[in-house]
Length: 105
Image (cartoon, rainbow, N blue to C red; front, side):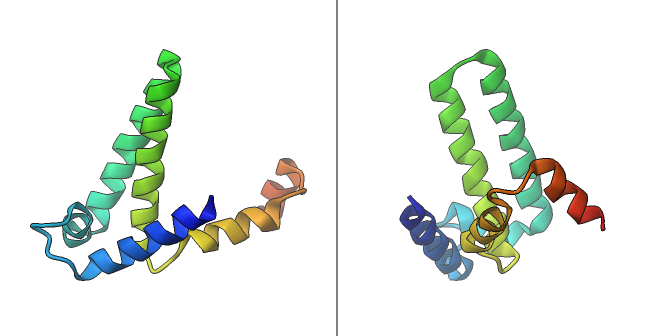
């Protein structure tokens, strides 16, 4: 499963040098952080709405859009999916309450 994330991260990195007229991702990079964040907000809202509607297919589709745009944000910021996976690994097996409390310290 993480192979897809790695492959996508490579493509997103390559798109940093692509022509904005021929690449959706390059156009997002060109518009800057605010445009990327706006897109994530839109996709998050659409994901919530799909869940509320109880439409599993739509929920999968919208979640894929949300994840995709989150990966664009990570790449824009010089981060990778592996950075997030490492953080999830760090949290694995730790109570969510304990992990959240540790962030306040």
